[in-house]
Image (cartoon, rainbow, N blue to C red; front, side, top):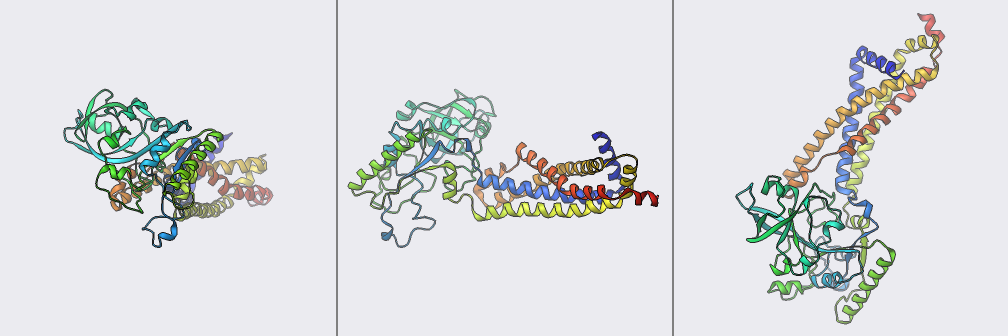
Length: 449
């Protein structure tokens, strides 16, 4: 029966080509705008590791002076929220704890990679100096090899993990595990290559922008101090002492280390908070942490909300997308109603020949569904075009956004989302007109025939 209704729908489309194109274009445009806005919203505001939201916590401690001593805060610094990173000495003390199931200290740095088989010239790269639990803690997928263990952090081993893109540039995408490359003119052995991985936003380090892509390479934590690798991220220094050497910087009150812990049980979180509070009290007696205690363990969702990764503009963008889609559906309802009422005589004849109201309603809903599904495919193509334009715009406006823009696209979830929107549009646009036509008395149309 559905096949018969689909054939009727196709014949109807041929008879009213102009009206069909107008209705399809309206639905397609609404779907394109909605999918594009949802994709951008997801890029800026999604929780990329929601399944671990109640396990992963950012660790922060407030080492800033009392706020009364800082009448004019530096630009972009939220004094009420406190620092979003840790000093090196605080991070090292907390990292020594055995309470977390996993723990990560890290920062990003710049360097030069060379020695690949597919590229002769050196390659500038952003690397993350991190501890061994980074990959397991954040569910980072591997294409080849694996990460390293904690021993490689303490007495740093010359090993390195490459991103999939960097491995493509250096080795043409081949399995490079065991190969030797040079990082800042020092030999490192490749132990792993990541698979496709693009957490959006980059929740674990929102410095310099939450939509930037992950780093090109990853090296053990101990190399940061050993090679005196400077940070390429934000440094929060409200009080500066004498910083003549890298060791002075490590011992300073500057916040530049990101720390995350995995605490799957409530008892672990309570013990971690107790440790942080005890450490705060000890440092307070040593004339550090002079402001009121402001220690935090913040899960991923709250972390993104506190740092305004999702702002009012993104909310308005999402509202605009759905409002535009609603306007398109309302317009289609009017067009469908006019079309169905225009051929009410045919429906009346079918009623007289034995079709009940349910058959008439199903026939017309099927016609709008076929139209909406076809429009969904066109809408997906339009949405892809919108994302391409947005990506090129980001790349032009922000020189740091070129790689992030390359990942602005929608995947299978967006396809399912567009299909669902099409079905909603079909039901919403066709239900009332079909109901109106089904209620018309067939006798009057039979007399006119």
